[in-house]
Length: 447
Image (cartoon, rainbow, N blue to C red; front, side, top):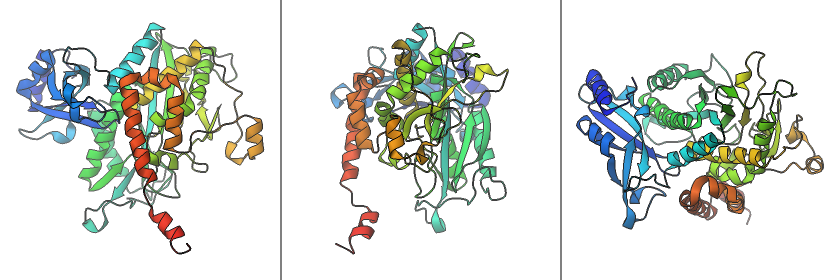
């Protein structure tokens, strides 16, 4: 049911009673933006694009150059399952953002990832990703509608009897599959009120589309159950935060370029160079992969979140992990980056990951020896002896690392790079000036 032309799209809309089309894109922070048109305007939008004012979109353009065009990508046409009703049924289409001249807009995150995918294709590679987006479900107290961090259940990892959200997750899975996302597993996560639903990997552009769709689909389903779904990295003190562990591989045609059966870890030299590039640029990527003040309250020792720049197979305290592959399943060989969180813009996150990995291949960056011991339990002197450095400890430190590494500018392009830095520096500056309840409780009585 995916159209390839305006004629096919109109036929599908007629068959299913679609009356409205939601044209979607994201700003540089990954927030979904949209404009809704009646189905009568669909053919014109496909043929000529749809004009909109980009001056009010985060990180897009100045008011003097505000005219932009949305160009629908028909491969993303989906009928929205929770928007089916007589006279109101709606479909969505994700769009490319273009300038008035019809050229790709430099501030379009989706276009940025598309450019990096073209760069990889020129080298003979297809970049595949499979993210694991964790999330929390919270309830509103006393029906007041006031949102607070009150977990919906008291379950733990893989719990069954205390998992009060199992039926809600089933509704989420059904909605995701109706949106064209192939779900593989769903389960309760470690923290109270925390969950995970995993979907099948694909090329990075399709996966980023799915990740964006995933977030607003789960929010919509949760809302219909009177709950709030959040992808905030660390909404609760003292429990695990939510990550977006991302599995990555490069394919050449139908062959996985990361495979070498003779290697101890099953990794080709290409894969090892790719890991080398990821580790080399890990600090600079942090601002894109963990882009909020709150992100760095997840990236602390003790909560299964990586802090130290290292790689391994079994060691989940490492930044990059190599999942063990069953015999006969070598095409599943991949590496997992564990620092991204689901507040990131998937298009930009995958773009910088790919750029860093390709840089490792281009410059043959050999990674250090893997570290299979639990790094959190090491003495500081041992970490120093092994040259185990850590990720930035705050958004402010991450922005400084981002400015110091020209690869991030190359990956994002000047437009997004400058506006992303500007927005995130403002966020960090605002946070630094806040006086928190913790400070009042800690200092007010004694000073």
